[in-house]
Length: 393
Image (cartoon, rainbow, N blue to C red):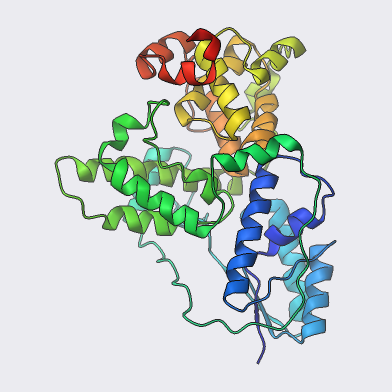
C-alpha cells in the first residue's frame, strides 16, 4: 500500500505560485524548503514540488502515483482552512484517506475555553488554563523511511539581492533550529527574564525564525525547556517566563482563529474610526531608520540588515509609528510582513493590535513606549544603538 506523507503542502506551493519573492519570509521559507528537500533525499525519499492550484496538483499526484492517503498539518487561518476543506472533499470523493494533524501549536485553537465554553479574551487566564492542559507530545522521527521513486523539481525564483545577506545571520533547517534551542538552554535560559529585554545581548531564544517556517515545533521547545535539568535558584521561574511567551503565540493563534478579520480590522471597532495622518515622508524615514530617535533607527536598521528585530525594540518602533507619527498600524503590519524572517500572520496581527490598543488584551491605547527612556533603561551603554547607528559612536 502506497501512502504519501504530504507534510509540506503549503510550503511547496507557496513558491511555485510566485515568479518573484515578495518578502524576506518568502526567501527564508525557500531556504528552509531546500534544507527539507536535502534531508529527505539523504533518507532516500523524494521531495515533490508542484506548480499551480494546490487542489488540482495534489489530485493529479494521487492519480499519477496511485496514492491511498494524504497526510498534512492543519492550518488555523480561514482562507487556508477553506482550501483544506476543498482538498479533502475532492480526495475523499475518490476514496483517498485524508489525515490532518495538529502540528504547529501547543493546543488546537478552540480547545482551551472558559468555564462557559467561550474563547478567552485575556491572556493571563488563557495561559493559566493552558498550563493545566495535557499537551500533545511531539512525534518522534521514524527510524526508517520508505519513499517513492519519483522525479523532483528544483526551486527557481528571482531573488532580490538584499535577501541573500540574511543567511549570514541565520542558518535554515531543522538541525540549525535544534542547535539554536540547545544554545538558548545552555547560555540564556538561566537569566532569561532579565536578559530578554536587552537588545545588545543574545539572551532571547531567537527561535521565532524557525517556528515561523515549521523548522521546529513549539511542543519540542516546550518539552526541552521543561526537561532542562540545570539546577540553581530561580531556574523554575526562568522557565516559566519563557513558557509564558511561547503560550502567547498560542493565544494569538486562538484570537485570529476566532476573529479572522483581525489582520485588516481593529478587534475593537472604535479604533477603526481614527483620523490617521499617514505622512509618506515620515513613513519612509521610519522604514529607513532615519527618524533621529536612536533606538527606533537602530531597530529599523537591524530589521533591514538581518531580517530580524529584538522584541523589546519591536514594541518601541511600532509604538513610535502609531503614536508619535500617527500612522495607521496596518502600514507597519505590512512592512513587517515584507521584511521579517519570522513573519507569522497571527503574531504579526495581534502584535500590532496590542501596541495600537485595539486588541482584546492589549496595551492601553494611551500607553506610549518612550524611545528615549526605553533606550536609557534597556541599552544603557548604547551598545545596540552604536552597532546599528554607527554615526553615533
